[in-house]
Length: 375
Image 1: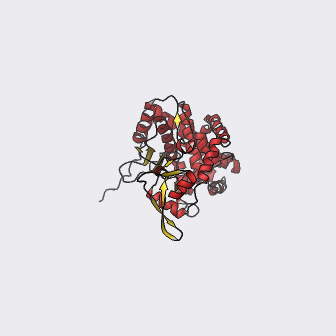
Image 2 (image 1 turned 90 degrees about the horizontal axis):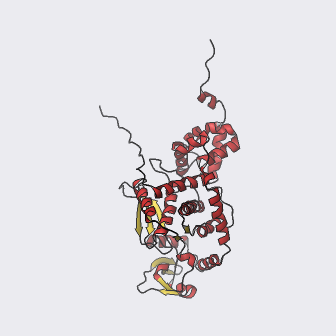
Image 3 (image 1 turned 180 degrees about the horizontal axis):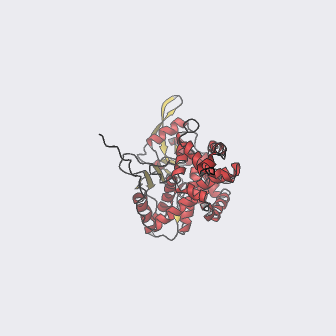
């Protein structure tokens, strides 16, 4: 009688690749990267060999529960990859989404670098350089009083440095000052006078042949398909919008606010940017695992990825915006940071394009676990 053949799991356990794959993933996380499934598989296969992919799912499952070596955010990232369809597709050999957008991203990078040599860029640098550096605690105090404030200064500074004066009934904010109990400062919107640099007033501008149904469908799908509440409300001049976790237990997963003084094409471009933050996992995932968890990326990566998505989607609809100017502030003359996942940028851009073209049904939610009946 012949000996029984080993099972596939026994063969994998005997491959002795679990620990090398684990160390490869830990090294990647330690560098502040949270890539797509395709990017992760490529890194593992590069470091361990092609057979490293055999152990990747098991390693991620183990790391998702590793409270010793990983933070909660890193564990969430590993867990969200295991539960996503992307990992299975990557392991099956499906093409990485990055290939679909390479030429578009190259165009964005070229425009971004060209912008840094322009007069508009120099005007913006001069404007921002004229502001005093306040202590982080004072910046926090200002944000508590006006969460959408980007630029603030004292009344004398607005007059001397910017040739702008306070509007009648301008509303001050309080910060702490050396040798004084408090100091009054004012948001940009509380002033008037010398025209502001174009980059301050038009940083979120998108324009081109416009169809209102694009924005209508995108908002409807954000709310009905993704349970993301979208509100148009008054924000600071220098804040076009923001995304945050929805609070209140009213059924919404996330919340987005868009500046209501923007025109419709600009609202569309900004909404793409904020939806990208959510669907790229910058705010973390959710219990239904509708998007990944990538909260430990740095702010620079967050903004480059989100604006790259907005650039791709708006370009596909024939709109031209300020994406190159926006990205240049985070990219400079450097190459694309390795922490940026072009695979996920491509995937989210494709999803948002579809959301603007057709009404999608609500996503599936996890069924609650059945509770055992009491005897």
